[in-house]
Length: 445
Image (cartoon, rainbow, N blue to C red):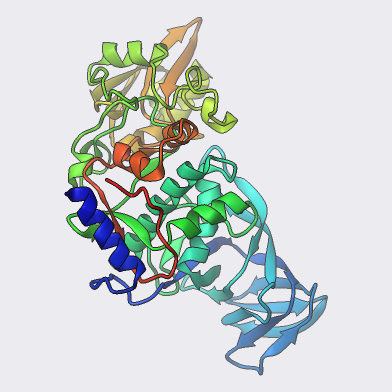
């Protein structure tokens, strides 16, 4: 009966007669991609128009090179070495042809994380440059929701992942974007979303593939929901074998039913609770039969294989200097896990030195005591030959979907809706704006 009801509902949505959409049409999003630079180099392909508040619009021909420099709370723009605009607080680059793209050199990513760096990235849409209240140069991209997602999915889960994993990622990413738009969680005066891990990674067109675009198109407008309302679709790279309860990671966030249980990442959903230190240690040292374990799932990509289990080693002087809050405290003696979640992630820890100590609370805060940050807080510490050795499991907070597990399930022929149900156990699919694309015929939750 439930399957029949679902099919009838989906048929109504495809026919465009389903009432109660969250948006009357596909929404546009404003994504902040840069707020840490004082100069930019942009190369335009295709025809573009540059608009400002003070001068008539300028049509820029194909292959125009722009140099933008922030000077004294405003910026000047040189096009192909000739100054075009100066003393500007804001300008907009508008595509003048469907094939137009903009390549921005050395875009920062992963700022503050061990994997951070810079990369030349390719964007479409309207590109807005402005000076913010701190006199910093900021860049946002304005584009339709589905186009935005085509710049999220391949970076979040990899463009060569199996199609059903890409589709699961597309639905989860769309849900996150919808929640961000409606709650204004990440918004500012000029943006709705950000482009890095604090929100979700958006990196434009550089890594898009036919399959990642197809995944977005085939799930158009779909999000996961609870009780008919879109829900946050949290996800992380590799859970290490077991999900974590949201209350142990983000105590202030809504404790939806899907997040009130944290299960092992296997078909049986069975395995030990890792709240005891000895159990967590044994689990991290083991090779459990779970979807995100590369020993059992050879289809996992290399980035995932390196994160299921990992090791960091430190000289005593190095880690003491890194973690100490007072040079008089002396050498680090011990890191003691005070509270662990069911996945083994530590959310309260004590750092004990020769002459002092402190306690850190919060899964992310504990990871960020280290420089660069640890991959996850599911770890244990040992001392060998005058060194601290940290052995850990997984990459990320562990709440919601394990992207590595989703890839493994898709490689086994499991459909995207079943993958989503595996990680968001109380969720249903919901279409949040009208569309003309037929939905997949196996959406049977």
